[in-house]
Image (cartoon, rainbow, N blue to C red; front, side, top):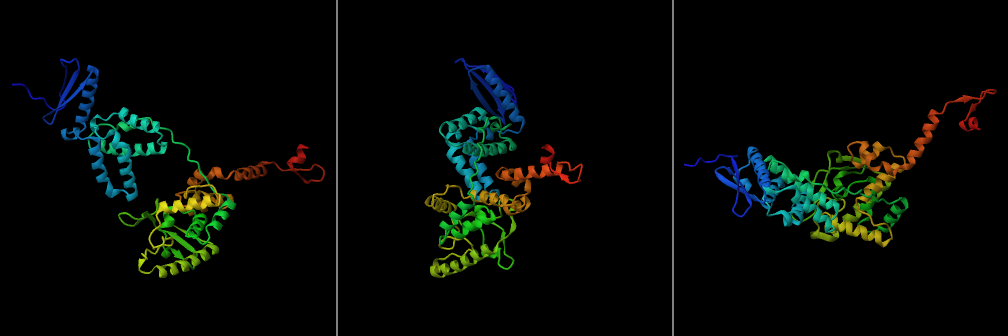
Length: 390
């Protein structure tokens, strides 16, 4: 009676067709692999034996990447923000599954993934999109490694395109004034005003409620951001980082602008009647609900085009606010806190290049500090460096 093979005991033999076949037993079931060369079979046998030692089960050898991604996304949903999970699902459905869905996870090799990335770039897909695909795929396959489906992450062995520099566009003072004048008497007027004077993120602005505003002390608290404006239901969450929760001082003009906005919203609420959905938002849509970011961006860009201003992203208003503050001598630590950064060094890393004038000022001050003081040999007056040189 033939001896039954145990796990990790493999064999290689040549078939009548001239090809080679490797076989290994796992959980009493036989796994097979066919290749043109004995070397390829040896490599497969070595890889599979290592996976078995790492906890590979027969069931996991049959799972395709499509099946695995579906299960992984389902388990991931409770721990991710809705927008993040939706983004992961869209990336998987649009880019990964059409190309790699049928490949078994255990057979997925770096060259499969590299071919996906290279093909996307050849078709004109942007570098940032390719990098997002890599983030999703690498994360999923890392989970496969942790659960013993595969022994190593093949996405770790790919060559990624270089991330292009993200060009930061800002408006100067006169352009900001032009924008705000053009926005007068529109739904954008106060929203754009507050965006520039505070540097808040877009979703922080859209999540502001009247209860966050302290009229007496002239401050506003950033307590939340808008996560989901519609679809499965409106949802709010904490700011992007733990340092995002902050209290910002507001100037008297901004308070006056907000008071006028409050009165206008009160009148709008009365005229809308039962169609108004009360969320207590400072910047609601025409029915009281959250403004959809897509609609905001559309209206914002139309405003810029109509007055001949550079068409920038809404997020660039945050960069604009930082630039204006730094270039007008507001200390970096204050700017950092208003922006919700963890520490001033982050602010300098992002915006330091936008304040070249401070370099010249620093150079002059250092000259003054290190220049030795000399007295006139006859009358004892202080001599300047220029007079000593001349």
